[in-house]
Image 1 (cartoon, helix red, strand yellow):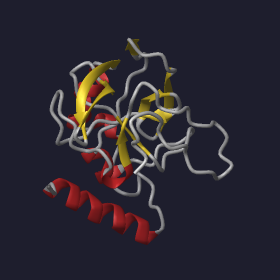
Image 2 (cartoon, rainbow, N blue to C red):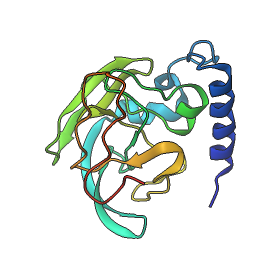
Image 3 (cartoon, rainbow, N blue to C red):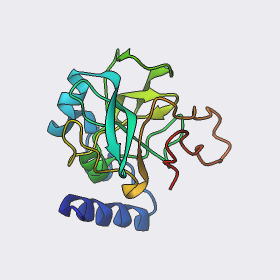
Length: 174
């Protein structure tokens, strides 16, 4: 099922790509953490695990304090989020200067970038999806976003131009 906001965001991303990668400031946006849709994520940046139905399979995934599924964006690098402007409004970054973890074994950290204090898990910046509700995963595989799982392969910190590793566990590398 296609969501109108996804189609509009996709058009916006295509327009940015055609112009040659306009920065967030030039795209007319302040960091996504200041948008109303990102505020709840910024206020409650606890990352925990929860069961969810992902592409017809019951999986353990990462969720925020409100139970919203967390995603990573495959094109991001360990040092930079590429989710800005209209894309960040559809996929709000999880931001917090001091996130907490509950029941996860990976490394939770903060990356200071265009989105502010963006929460990372094993080097992957984390996002929610504007159309999700607690316990509902609807963004899997859309626009290069994939649900984050506790076994997410750490993202290499070197920026040697290699693509981020495919996620581990559950076969989310489509």
